[in-house]
Length: 253
Picture (cartoon, rainbow, N blue to C red):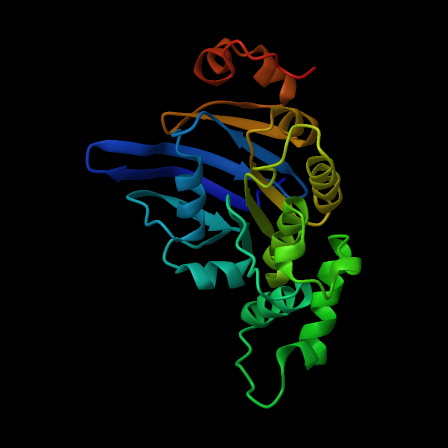
């Protein structure tokens, strides 16, 4: 199976600090590929390089067999890469619908029409409603984003990331800030299971229970290098992974 997203030899240096060290990574269609590693391992930098927010010093990235090395971030989004962030990026003073409509409007490159509110533009509103329904937020459609629970805000952010109809979805700690085993975390795990049939997903997450239950493959990043890649069983049994990341933590069965 040909990867949708292929990364070869990706490097980012800040002076003498090597943050990503010749990273090779493939994301396959319909796959959740998790990247785990300790704080400072280079995970968020890696996502920034894939998105084009952070320029790479070496290496190549291709999407669906086509190089995207020279594309700026907006063109990478239009080519098929969507992203969520570590910290929720929804606009608190707007409603759920207004947030989703703005995301759809931005993804489609629509200009602003001063005499017609975006939420009254059928093509934008209908797509926004589809995404809101997909995220299970229909009851909150007209509520202010500020009134949502943290988990619901993460779901809204996911709807906004999907507005561009991405081929590959980059998720940077979607369960950050949720307690282990709480309702929001369980809902996000269920949502990701449903999304994997439609999108290839690169998942960065510290919740090991979620990672081991969701990921088809896991890559372990340590000091900017991929030190192990495989299924959950391979990662559990790797002494290098235990030493570099998991330490004395109990690995989920």
